[in-house]
Amino acid sequence: MTLVPDLRPSVVAACLAVALCTAVAVSPSAAIAACSGFGVTPGQIGGTHFKASPERHSVLVAGTRGTRITLSGYVLTSACRALRGARVDFWQADANGAYDDTGVRLRSHQFTDTKGHYWLQTILPGPYANRTRHFHVTVRARGERTVTTMLYFPGVALNAHDPFFDRRLLVRLRIVKHRFQARFDFVLRR
Ligand code: FE
Image (cartoon, rainbow, N blue to C red; front, side, top):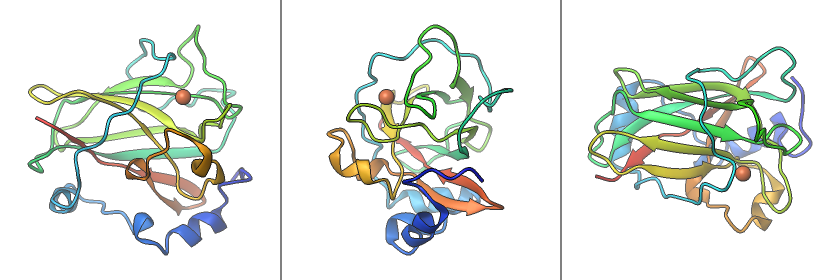
């Protein structure tokens, strides 16, 4: 695995010991059962880098450099119902903290499956300026309020200095077969 200075497996292992990094549930029923304890996903600014993207579950292409990570989870209603067919748009900086504002590199959208599940194969976004590592995301579903927000990573020192950082938007990280796996469930407000 390519290691990044502020997000090493040892850091992840340490954070796994605290509540925010508890082992992730893997079944949709477990996710929905846990939903009663979740608040609605808070929104954040979308920034200036959003643009249309292709539908795909992986943004990894030949020559993509960076630490591989799989992000996955469910899109749920505040009443703990899974939302099928919800549209999830992702955009992010590359490993050097740069956005592709002319092409579609590291940009994608997808629709949740019948169980409300989404997944994305990508790389860890790099920090830039005063921003810690983060994914940008917009989630839309019929009958629910659209949320645009950002996702953050535990164990990153820059989190403490980023004015937008919100620990409610931390992914849960684990390492499976030397690969980072991040989990986040979106809960939409009706
Ligand atoms: Fe950004």
